[in-house]
Image 1 (cartoon, rainbow, N blue to C red):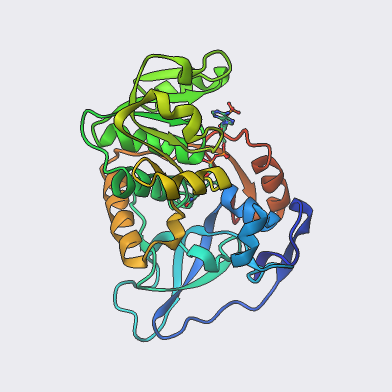
Image 2: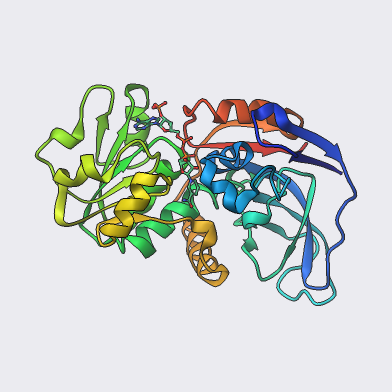
Length: 320
Ligand SMILES: NC(=O)c1ccc[n+]([C@@H]2O[C@H](COP(=O)([O-])OP(=O)(O)OC[C@H]3O[C@@H](n4cnc5c(N)ncnc54)[C@H](OP(=O)(O)O)[C@@H]3O)[C@@H](O)[C@H]2O)c1
C-alpha cells in the first residue's frame, strides 16, 4: 500500500510516498481502507519540527515518528477477533492522535480509540478533518472556557479550520460570536453563523470599547497582553498555538490565559467530546468547510498550500 512519510524535518519536499506492507490488525484492532484523510497545520509543524522546543517531544535531530496524517475516514476491511463494536464494511472515521499514519491507503486502529461510525449524512471528505478543527475547538470552548449561553466570544482566525469550527460550535452552544478575518472572507464567516465580523486588515478590535468574555485566538497572531483591555473582568484569552509568551502568561495568570494541546488529553475525555460532535453532525448542526482536496499522490502540493497560511476551512487528501 502507499503511505506518506518524512524521514527528516524540512519543507514539503521531505515528504515521500512509499510502498509498504498493508498492516495486519491485532486482536483488538480494525483495518480501515482509507477514503479520505486530513492534512493540517499541526501536520506541517510536526513535519518542520517547529517550534524548535517541540523537538523535545518529536525527536531532537530527526522525527521519531515518520508517518504523516492524523484524521481519517474510510471503510472497515477486516477486524481482529476480539473486536465487538464494529464489523466489516462499516463506514468509520476518527483520528490516530500522535501515532499518525492516516495519509495512507490503510491504517489499523484499536476499537477503543478515537473512532466512531460515520454519520450517513456526511461524506468521507467531510468526516476526515473533523478531529482537527472541530475536536480542538470543542475542547477549548467546552472544557477549557466552559462557554455559557449568552456569553460573547471573539474568534480570531475565523476562516481557518479551528476558526470555522469555533464559530459554528459557539453558536450551537448559545454564545454571541464575533469573527475576525480578512476582507475576502467576511461574507463566508457570516454565512457560517458569526453575528458580527471584523476585518483585521481595516480594524483593530483591541482598540475598541467592546468587551468579550472569551477571546479565542485560533491562529496565534494575538497575545494576552494586547487583548487584556478588551476582556470582561472574568474574561479569558485562549489559544491552541504554543509560544513562549502564551506559555509564560498561562503560568503566571492561569485563570485568564489558556493553552492546551488537545492531542495530549486523556483518550476517554477526547472520546466523550468526539461522541458529542458525532451527534451534532448527525443532527445537521455542524458542517465541514473544505477549501481544497488533493490526491494522496499530490500530498506535497497539499502541504505547500497549507504553509501559505491562507486556507479557508480544511484541506483533505483523497484516495481514489
Ligand atoms: N493546540 C492544539 O491542540 C492544536 C490542534 C490543531 C491545530 N492547532 C494549531 O492551530 C492553528 C490554526 O490552524 P488552522 O488550520 O485553523 O488555521 P491556519 O491554516 O493556520 O489559518 C488559516 C486562516 O487564518 C486566517 N488568518 C491568517 N492571518 C490572520 C490574522 N492575522 N488574523 C485573522 N485571521 C488570519 C487566514 O485567512 P486570511 O488569508 O484571509 O487572512 C486563513 O483562513 C495552527 O497553528 C495549528 O498548528 C493546535
